[in-house]
Image (cartoon, rainbow, N blue to C red):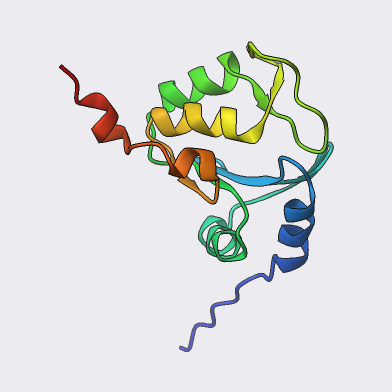
Length: 134
């Protein structure tokens, strides 16, 4: 039997996220969430397809699927939220405050998440390099 593989075209949603300050794609064990406006999100389970399309389009991507569950819970509940389509609050940021995307992405990158298309994070040394010290 011939099996067909269909890929959803997320280009319109990704374009909306690219136009929104703080717009990004987050991937976790429960699927994906595309943040594309103030309070506007698209969620689903087609993680690999939307991730590939988002990276190719230049959309910031945070993939925490490779991290320990306890670490993700700690970052999610204890850390700030990304200010999507709204102004970030002033630092210092804490749980339920709104921070710039790069500030949240730096925390996830330091904990081992895979990050794409966020220049402030891409300039940082890889996590293994940061662990080596005196």
